[in-house]
Amino acid sequence: MKKKILGIEIENDTLSAVLVENEPTGIGVSYAASIFLSKEKEYEQGIKEALEEITRNFEVNDVLCAVSIPSSQISFRNIQLPFKSKKKIEQVLPFESEPMLPYPVNNLLIDFYNTNSTQHDNHTDLLMAAVDKTLLKTCLDILSSFKIEPEIISAGGYTSALYLSKIAEVPENWVLVKIGTNNASLFIVKSRQIEFARSFNTPSKTISKTKSICINIQQTIAAYEEFSKEEFDPKVIYITGPGIYSASLTNDMTIMLETSVKLIDLVASNILPKKDSNEILAEHHKINDALSLAMTIIDGVKGINFRKGPFAYNNFLSEYRKDLIITAILALIVPILILLNIVFESHFMEKELTRIDNKITNTFKKTVPEVKTIVDPLRQIKEKMKDIRKGSQLSNDTLIRRYVTDILNDISKKIPRKIDVVFNNLVISTESVIIDGKTSNFNSVDAIKGHLEKITSFEKVTIASTKKDKTGNRVRFKLKIQL
Image (cartoon, rainbow, N blue to C red; front, side, top):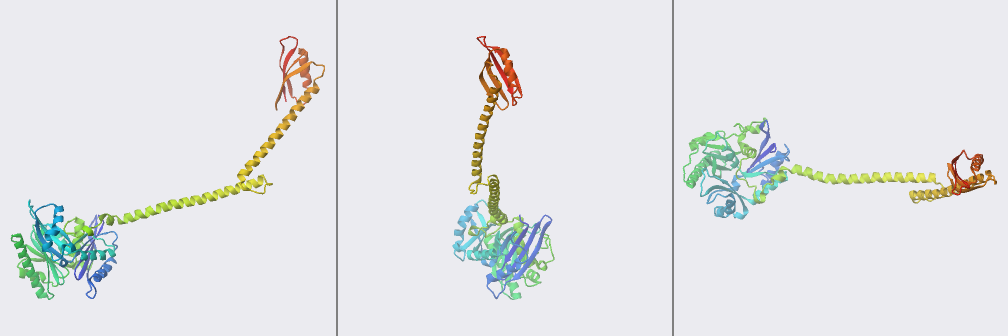
């Protein structure tokens, strides 16, 4: 769960907010305020100005939020249905409740709370709440303009009763009255279940207002007893709300009702330790509802919530909005970086190719300066080298022919004509000459060897072999000459 939870209580003439921080060391209030809405301006404009003042004090991006709207704008009804399935209840409830509601059911959004203090096999007792869809949309639009997306939208005073019912020190049967400037809402809790809820207007004068509140409490209890067919004797009547107008109100009401009346203080009840010295915490009755809204999120308390149907809370988008934005940014940045990398690599590759081309051109100019027109230096220099090789090959062939001619000429001059000799084979290389031939006798072979040794280009002459031929009349020989 996120560390910061914001509770906002919207009433007819006030807006209260509490920012709670849920940390491992404990839960604490980091901000609290209660602001009167300007009577000189439209109601929606007054809410906007109050929200603007509140949101100056903290960032709302990473905050979970719960909101309550005035109970005077909500119709509470009790209804009994002959089945227990939540799905069936949601399907049937609008049609069953339509005769009980003051407005067309199509214009209303309905939610319900199971009030069965004891389990019944054949029916389900429900406390139903209906709110005008236009009012709900207006509220959500205003909050959205401040980037506030509430997870819960409930009824004013309801979450205080809901949260109070979970506290062990609180008795099982009691009444909560939330008092506004000109109205009040009342919640009857029996066996720790909110079983009955009503809202009513109150006069502005102090004495008549106290009396009016007490009369409405008695009338509502009587109506509940008539509905439930059971007596209800509350152990205590709790009061809260920004409209509490007198320090003696609890005593005055206790005398009139002959029942203990107490001012609830969620801040000082060890439910929520203080985190700062904000003066508004001293006026706890003004922020109890906002505080209970935040605590219902922290503790996961479930109750009436108008965030359903077309107004459903998109928990995934709200919870992970920041992560999704970061992911989207990264998804955009990555291809851009890849594209930039390709552009840079292409640029540097082009520069390198230009450098290599220039180097080839310069080398070409130095190697073959006689060529003035350069189109494709690499191809041109390859062709030039091929021409050079061809010319070199022709020169070599010519030299070899001259070299062989000179050797044959030297041999011919050195061997006297009187020596009877026939050369059958002559092999000339750059390092040696091999002569294969026939002569009249072995002495002639020695004579031929001696004459050849006088040639200056011959370093050494060796008789490789000598033998009689098949006729026996001549000698076959082989001479090896080292150049």
